[in-house]
Amino acid sequence: MKQKCALLSALVLVMVFVSLGAAFAAEKKIVVGFAQIGAESDWRVANTKSIQDACAAAGIELRFVDGQQKQENQIKALRDFITQGVDVIGFSPVVESGWDEVIEEINDAGIPLILSDRTTDIEGTDYYATWMGSNFIDEGEKAGNWLAGYLERQGRGKDEINIVELQGTVGSGPALDRKKGFENIIAKHSNLKITQSQTGDFTRDLGRTVMESFLKKGEKIDVLYAHNDDMALGAIQAIKEAGLKPGKDIIIVGVDAVKGAFEAIAAGEMNCTVECSPLLGPQFVDAVKKLVAGETLPKITYSVEYVYDETNAKEELPKRQY
Ligand code: GYE
Image 1 (cartoon, rainbow, N blue to C red):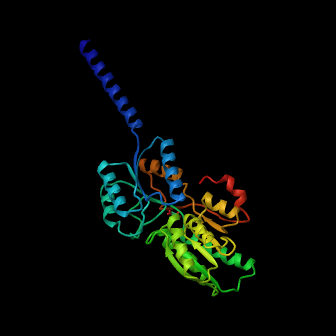
Image 2 (cartoon, helix red, strand yellow; image 1 turned 135 degrees about the vertical axis):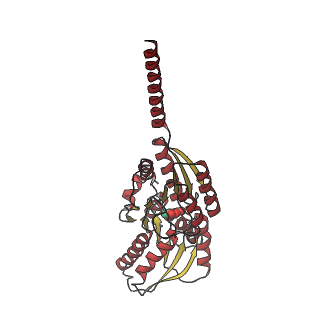
Image 3 (spheres, protein in one colour; image 1 turned 180 degrees about the horizontal axis):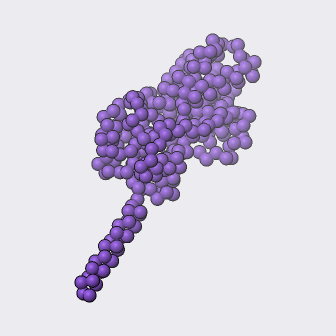
């Protein structure tokens, strides 16, 4: 009898431990490291908030590092995440090249990698689990097509048009591809040419100073194509300071579709913005959960996006989340 009792209590103890273990496992928080580029634009600020909010809502522990637009800071953050043994790494690479070594280390550590928004120039797709973001070539093409259509509607379809270009961060995916996409379209229109092109590093401040230097040259400028809205908004200041009317004397096309661009379009100071959604948080969290559960994900998920101008910007403005 005594023996039976002992056996029974041992069994009960084991069961208690097993269920405690299961409860603990169920409650074990998912830990995610995210190496963000910086806070260079309204887009980026909205992107960070979207990821932070979605992780918080899902009860995911997010270790977030702002790389301040420096590759070496991002590399350090990624190495720290490996040392900490996080469950999943999220990463938006500031430029395309120079990641081979650190990504090999992530892969060797067996930590699933989610690329968010930007990509690298590493060959193949084996090194990451999934990538989510926008088709930047498509965005450049949308900007070019919008411009060609607008000029046509204005009766300037055959005029010689000088375009100045504010490029994004040198060597970044969106700067390379937005340029490529735009050039694909203007190559079909012999009257459209880029006369000056320089980087504004995706920031408002540089957008303004570089536009100032474009204007100082004294050449005719018909159009500004900016790889993001922040640079376009900075350039608007410079154009006003030069005594010109942005949106009228110079046609302005941006990318991102941040609130500031909608306001500028509504005020007649900007003409078009091509949408690029930063609201990747919910999709990111969904991918994290699936990876932790051992699922395989599609290699690419593109966001669905639109083009806004004077015909639809005012109506959309109250609905904008960023
Ligand atoms: O367009 C720009 C930002 O990578 C898509 O980065 C992103 C770009 C965005 O700073 O505003």
